[in-house]
Image (cartoon, rainbow, N blue to C red):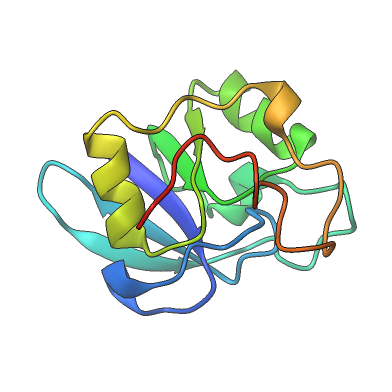
Length: 134
């Protein structure tokens, strides 16, 4: 499976998962079958609030799933329309998020779990994410 994880810095599997898909400066692109990880610059990080273009952000990369700390409703809908699954995780590293996904600990996100705000508190899902990464 090809998985995209929005991250705050280019540190490979040790990169911190971003709390917001659209404003993440980087995406860790991981092929879970081969273990190959590539970092891709977010091609749409300067968008206006609520105007995220997730396919532009991914720069044409083909992925099966996105694992994020938070994502807006519009971005989630656009990703889901293309067949991508969206999962939410608590803050942590890409390595931890992928381990949780592989273990079946992450649930596919519903539109009701999308972020309705940005830049407030400790993130959209600081208290409501489906799993606890330790």
